[in-house]
Image (cartoon, rainbow, N blue to C red; front, top):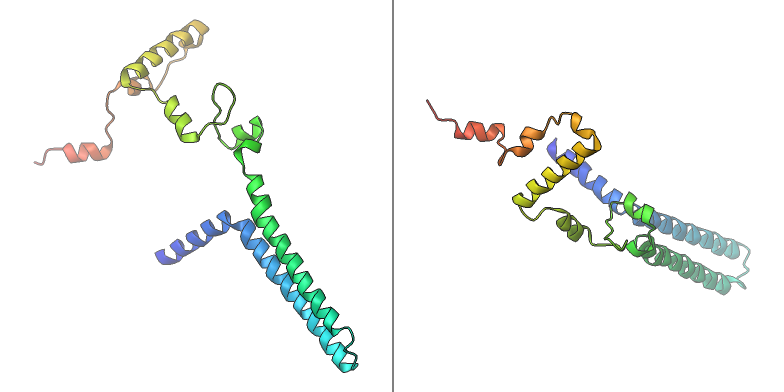
Length: 171
């Protein structure tokens, strides 16, 4: 049961990640098969009529079509795919939509670095920032709303139910 769930999850992950490549490869194989079947029909037709004058031309056209379709496939999966997801080509709205962060100069910044800069450097600065934000909220008139999480924020460490069970003294 669990193996099937893991297998389905894995296949879903692979499909979502490589959907464009999988679908374009299936389309490529379908088109190549179709070209081959059309060519086989022409070859059998020419043999029935005993007219082999255009047989060499048909082989040339078949391989030219194979080359064109394969070239389109490579262009679609290599060139267009790379251009679509370059971070520099996105507008500011698209960058916000995809969760990419901008620095003060509105330049794209690495997500991890931007998130690290946004974190407070220590608990002291975090508490000072909280006090500043509380005083600013009070000045704005928002201080009248009670903060249900205020006492949780003031705690130095938070304990879960598991911590209480582990620290519970046996009788």
